Amino acid sequence: MRNWYSWLLVSLVVIVLDQTTKHAITGALIFGESRELTGFFNLVLAYNKGAAFSLFASASGWQRAFFMTVASVASAVIIYLLRKHAGQTLFSLALSLVLGGALGNLWDRTVLGHVVDFLDFHYAGYHWPAFNVADCAIVLGVVFLFWDSFKKPSGSAA
Image (cartoon, rainbow, N blue to C red):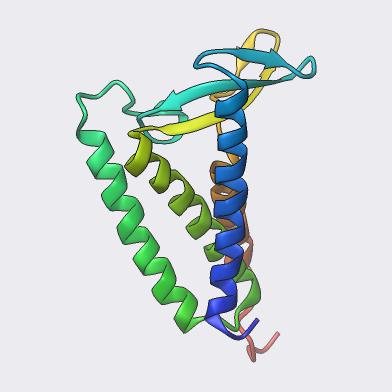
């Protein structure tokens, strides 16, 4: 995709998937409820006022504005980079995923005051912190950015 607007569509798909799944979960479960689907995976309705893995979730309230600001600034930088590098497929895909995830979680923070998490993986009584589709997109985007950083620049000698 050479047009940077096309990359924004990828971000929009992430946002729609994220918000649709969060809406479905909040309609199906009550806060704190967990439904076992397999021996290692549950659906759970959890609210996260902090960052990844509920970091700073119990802080006095400053974290909401802080994380909203970080997400907004990061989104602006990502849009700038998408405009500048729209022809770099893996790099732009990675940025689009991160942007969609950041905006999905930003929506939650802005409208709800917390992020809705619902994917709960566990083993032998140990649970990975609950997460959501936006978080998955952000992690996948970061993996793609890491992968892209090892590619040789176009036109470089071998």
